[in-house]
Length: 286
Length: 163
Image (cartoon, rainbow over all chains, first blue to last red; front, top):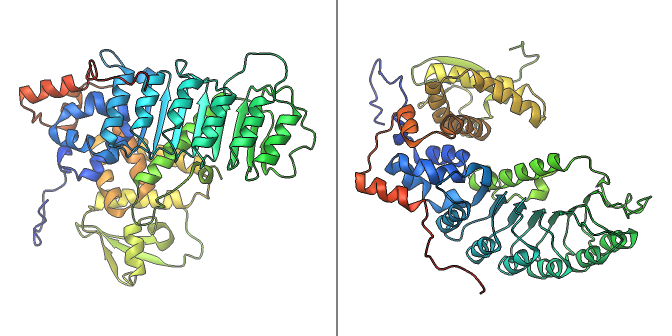
């Protein structure tokens, strides 16, 4: 906009045309629109919006929900497109309601910077898929698995492959009955850096819980639900500051966690003067 | 706004159409742009805001006062922001987003961007163009290519079966 200095009454009441907004504003708006709509609508609106949409910085955090994807678009294809556009700069991704092991592998092979991974109701993604993917994700800090059951071997692989892992949420109900501490022991032995753990629907006993407390010395926050074999007593109350042993609703936490994921990414994107360039999920939980 | 008790410092802000506004420094420095000016020693006189008109600035100041009166409670701040933006029409939102960006107010910027994005949610490309007054500057060939690109792009592309 040319701002001629000595105009007495300028007829500039109307804002500039939308496609002429500074790119950073267009980017901020489109980011709010979300990945699916950027790829299916915004890119077609005009060449400016397309070029803004193609910037890798627009694709550092991607949240894809199956319910947002309509025919003729395909969930996996859109995810792959988003990952391609990120050009390796992807920091966080949330898949909700769809996705396959192949897709997860595709993402992991192209996203070595990934810190946050959330798989929510991705029923086709298996523990095996997670196991293969995390091998490519050495910087992973936050892993949220909902309804993706991972076995001991996969937990071990996550622990070994992702030494920076701080935040682990496993809300995958184990349908088997009886007691078993093998997963808890795997966490205890392979995820020493955990700061926050949320584990819902696990068969562990006090032995497993104790192992976790002894193995994960940085643990500050522990939420558990439907871990019926654990008899808490005073077991962990002294050490863990933020302890919730019978969390009432998973739904509530699911949204909370995803919001935090989004906040992390926004904080990353807003790498302006005063904003911290690095904000971990753990910090945001305070 | 309620009368401020023992207001420490008041700033005078000037819009690009020469309107003057008084605002408590504690509220005004929600704007990083203003905060920087204050830190650079401009606070004594009038702070000129060349990219914001009086109408928009008045609205932004209402927001500054409102939000800074709320104690550190993110829920309440959010509901204030929602309420603040709920009666703004589309053109006003455009002014607000420019102002929020210029004033470097990240929370307002976030909220206004989200509100604008909400307007185009689930809308067709044609609808968005009309609403935002954007001309289709694609050639028909380009447009067809863009449409195709985002459909079944990955058919036939190498898959990552077993590695």
